Image (cartoon, rainbow, N blue to C red):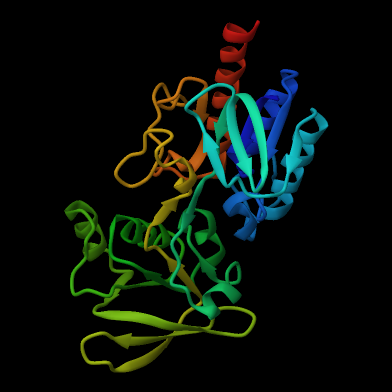
Length: 305
């Protein structure tokens, strides 16, 4: 029996663990097999407060984990496979093991959708990215490509124009799906050009992105173009499959939060990108992890003191 089980180990989950540990709560972090969240796929992080020099994403996550361990949080580097929130104490399954807790904080995050190319995986962090706000400053006066056609893609393209020399948006359809105001901004920006009815079949380069190979979906014609970076912006998917039927999710699968951290089940709290589809930043995730932890501490004081 733990006071709190935190599912997830990105900035939200680790910050929550720091706070619950400092509050002397018995804390278990079910960190996952691939722990650390999306920052583990990020190169240099320049926008996390407290680091005047860039810090590598995995290094930042390692420091946060050690800080949580310093305050007594225990870590299990396996994936949560099921939960039962229908009765108390809450149950979290990790394979054949079952752990019980007075309260649970869900911080499983969201995963960027990828194209599924071998070259994309190999060059991730070497010019392949899913976050313009995070990585755009590394491509000042460079040529970059954005893949997608919705609000996320156009937002990424507009962000990149503040740094890059040229931004090419590649979309598999003949028109954008983004809201009209974003489309107007993109079409009026002289740095942005468009390639329609096309899909990227391969990202070129050995140790860094050097170009892409495309196919026109209408003519099947193939072509190549040079680029210094590829930003994949085809959406994000919240990591909530084990919570279906246990708590309220919205139509896109994100956890519905009330009063910022409360879920539809009293005593189960949420933090980070698993409920935040707007900001998706390490610092906002960390802030919501703090809030969820403080609310969990208060919940335990009110119900178990």
